[in-house]
Image (cartoon, rainbow, N blue to C red; front, side):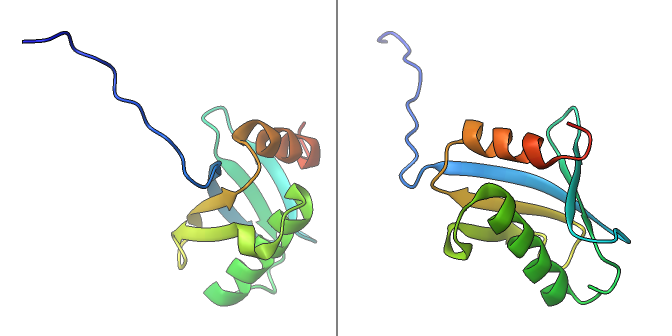
Length: 107
């Protein structure tokens, strides 16, 4: 048998994946904090109570914070849950991390 090689993975679109936990009751949409394990805690107003309203408010906040277009954001898991996985197409994970930390209340 030949020598084992490491697999190579490529990312065709480029970007970042965000693990997000949405909390309601914030006076306005905000990035509350980023946990040690990388979960982004997002506060949204309690007036957003239906999944489509919450998701719309979340994407609007991320669009503003990250400086991307709505078409560059996609909720890929958790559309009806407080825990969500959001894909950000375009900016590198490092750029996304910097923007989120800058916007975070606890940065």
